[in-house]
Image (cartoon, rainbow, N blue to C red):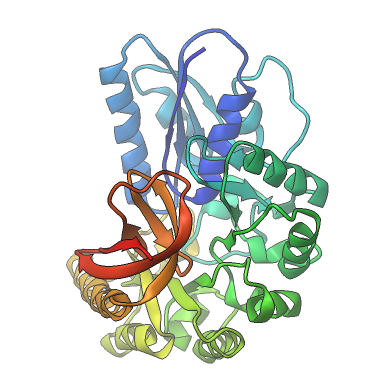
Length: 388
């Protein structure tokens, strides 16, 4: 059976896509489009991916699943070539002949870095977000399922495991405890990385790992969203600006070489210029070197969609300004690494990342190679290096 996966959106989707393909029995050809609904643009890209897949392989059957399929099943069912639309609750068995035993979704087959899901769903109700509607309540996978998924990915050749989920810092029993247990029972796990974290949910056991566990990779991506207290309140976030800066100070104190990434939304409803500048200043105040900038997108059936909207051109302009500043900071960071020695994991095509998640290219390096490299230059957003 040929199962081709097209995955949009978060790292959890990548883990789930591989699990869907793995659970499929022999039979017909399928194209699985695992959709995203975090923004209106993500939904548009999902529709575009379905149409492109049908044009390129008109005889293949198309399964659409994921968050956009959960929220707009009829719209996707009407697209040419779509044979099946399955929501998130049943997606892992979408192609299976029978229900398979529950397990933690995992995989990114053929890659050196593999994603393993720790949880799914979200219990929070940020006013801009529709993902909780698509994913449901927060549910944590049992430790044993996560442990087995990690072992399975290492058996397949994974050199680095990324724990992922919709809200992994909400893991039942604590994310730090989960990580400590995994590292204790799986000595082959040499590189553990974490996907997006909610700053107010980082627990003390995780801070202990940040301070003293070299197998935990020192790059932490935080869901900050804004740098202005009034906007954070209107977003119904659970932290204020000082909470974010204090958390990052703790991370940096625990591990001075740690690098910080963040999600930020520009042009949220009611945002004034002063509020926008507070988010802009957050880049410096939190030493953010990897920012994902999103122009605000009013998602259907969310409170933020009913708030007074800013003109779209203003939203785009503020996002562009924020993105430009983020790129400038990132470029300075990458330049600061030139002439240093960095631990590097090569993933594909001679390209990989440092422990701090700086992208690196080493000519002729084999997939899976890991070691110290000397950084000799920067090419756009990539560093160039040679083995030390």
